[in-house]
Length: 405
Image (tube, rainbow, N blue to C red):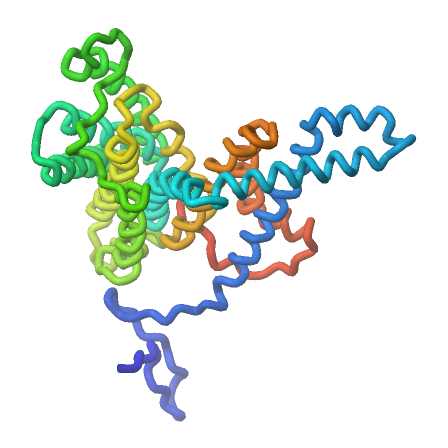
C-alpha cells in the first residue's frame, strides 16, 4: 500500500492546492535530507571538543610542561611529548570504552540509565516543558525499588517484576506532581522539578535513618543490597536491564510518532493555545507527559538498584538525572539521538577511568569533553565560524518554551 500525499488535487481553474490536515495516526514520510545539517553540526561539535580536549591533555602532561622551558632551543621534544600524550590519552579512552567485551559491557551499563532518563527529558521537551526533575524522579524510583528488593522474600521472576514496577510507579507519580502543578496552578515546571529534587533527596536521607531502611549492624545511611531474586539476570555479562533501555527508546518513538497521545504532545509543545482551540485537553497532556517522563527516570533508577546490586545511599542516582539533560540536548530530543548521545556519554564515562589508569590523565578530562560537546552543539554559530561551515536551516532544534511557557 503506497503512502497518500497530504495535498488535495488542484483545479486548474481554481485556487492553488492547500495542504490537508494531517491525522494523528497517518504515516509520515521521513525527510532524511533534513537531518543532514544536524548530523554535520553534531560531528563538528564532537571534533572541536576533541581538539580542545587534546590541548587540555597536552598542557596537563608534566613532560610537555617541562619541555616548554627549552622550547626555542629544541622544540622537537615539545611536539613529541604532546603527540604522545594525546595518542596515549585518546587510545586509552577508546580501549576503555570499546576496546574489549568487558569495556563494552561497562559502556552499555553506564549508558543505559542515561538513555532512559534522557528519554524522559526529551519527551518533556517535545511537550514544551523543561524537565529538570529526572534526578528526584530517579530517587523516588530507587527508594521503592530498593525497599521491595531487600525487604520482601519472593520468587525470582515475581520479585524482579514487582521491584521494577515499584520504580516505574514511584518515578511516574513524582513526575506527575510537577505536571499537575503546571496544569492546575501554572507553576513553572523548572521551579517545581528543582524543588522536588530537594524533597526527594531529603526524603531519602530521612528514610535511610529509619530501621526499615537501615543496614543491620551499621550506623551509616546505607540500606541492605537488594536480594538476588530482585536483580536483572545477565546475558553475556550484561544485565538485561540494558535491553529495556533500547525497548524504552523504541516505545518513546512509537508514542511520539505513531500514537494519538504523541500527536497531542507535539501539538501542545508547538502551540498550547492552538492545541486547546483544537479541542485537546492541555492539562491532561502536561500531566501525562511528566508522568511518562517520571516512569522513564524510574526505569533509569532500576538500572542502578536492580542491575548493579547498589544499596540505597545518598549518591545512588549519582549525576545521571542532570547528565540526562545534556544527553537529551545532544540528542535533539529525539529517541534515536538520545540513544546515540547516551552511548557516547557512556563511552566517555567508561573510557575516562582507563585514561587515568593507563595514561595518567585525570578522569575529569572525559567530563570536560562531555561539557564541550554540549557547549558546541548549543552554539552552532560558533562551530560554523570556527570551521567555516555554510549556515543551514537546523531541523533538529529542541522545542521547549522555557520561561515563557
